[in-house]
Image (cartoon, rainbow, N blue to C red; front, side, top):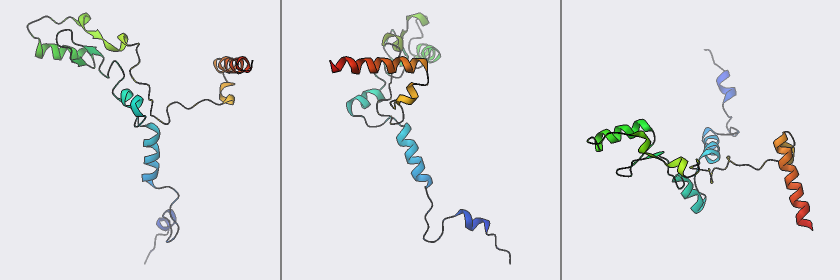
Length: 140
């Protein structure tokens, strides 16, 4: 009778739980990367901001399409009697400043940099100097 002890070493013992379960790790990853919660700002962000998630807007009916190829397919099926002109379609992202979402409620998205992280780059040092100057100006 041969017993393989390699399997018993990797698993937790009778009263010894494993350090982290796959479910726990997956939930931490999801919480750090998913855009959920955040109140009204988070809801607006998930809806795509003012521009929405689709990029192009149909000049005839106002339907939005994610790409110019999708826009052409929409035009051929809904407005086939008229010629398709790509330049007539409105670029909604460009019209609203180029940014559609900011990740308001993503926990892992926008962590404030520490003083040590800012001191590593030229841009960071300039930002750090601006912060120090703002603090000095607020004292007086």
